[in-house]
Length: 203
Length: 250
Image 1 (tube, rainbow over the protein chains, first blue to last red):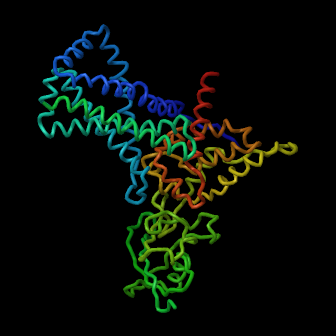
Image 2: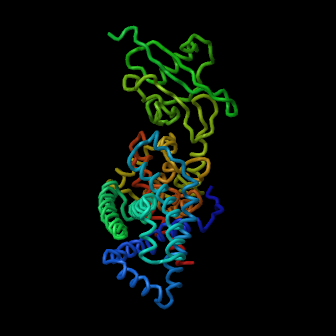
């Protein structure tokens, strides 16, 4: 009876790599990125000095490619496929977790758009305090940035909740619930840090 | 007591897979302790809509009438459940009946759940014990294990978890929570465990366990309260170990 099935050997690997990339390196990068930008609160001079130091770091382009650009591109491209293969039904099944399911997809799409604007303006454009200050002086620009930070952090923290299931760490409903609260607290903390970064540019 | 009371139903009708669908409303006399099936039987006796038009009898499927076979699954007031255990006294009226949307429609409320049985074949949801000679008694199963495994064995392949799952749709190949949970059941069995590699390998495939989106509707929709999300998380761990181990030994 047991027939050998034709298997696509990479499907499992791709999905697990997609999950892993969300934490390593993307999530870790996001955490450091938000923490490091707290230097903006010390004023334009200090902030621009940090950016200049990082820009002249030897081999920075390699680090940017391997740690930031390639992982985010892979995660975003495969994530788009994941979004396409889902079909939300929150109107019929209005459970919290089902809302988180659709929010994870919405926040992912928004974060990709945000990153495209963010990177083209600040990494490939003029990267300094004044440039972002100018961007968020516009209320729409500020809303776009604030939402970008909060949704990126949400995507990371809700992803971290699911990560623990994907890797078989939280198995029962109780452990999943406790981990959800932990991720919830981390979401608030990281959002506050991110918005504190942003508030430094409102002057 | 509750004489002259009426039951109002709104039913989604469709004469065949390629035919257009429509809504029809029915009003039937109330009797104590009715369920959705007995309402459908009343309509069958006298298929006339609420506004007096003659129509065809509503087609549905049912069998055990005690919520163990899964045949009468349908959307009742928007939620997938069994018509036999849907008691009229507990339902808001008009009672809206619609077929499950994740399976090919045959007619009216009747759908073809074949894909679920195909998925059980895909994951080898059985214990191979056939041979040319007696294999003797199998190993014993610990009582504590039997107790939780018994809960998983209550699955009746009714399709409620598939209906509630956002990852099960025409664009995805996801085999759904029911088949995944059955892998856990058969891998827990001491004899079934001997073939667990076959079932885990099947879960690595396209549409397998990785396509779960953790919306966790399945565990809420399951009429038998099977811990489907626990099964999925447990098998995430097992498939990770299995895949890594197999890869490192290549």
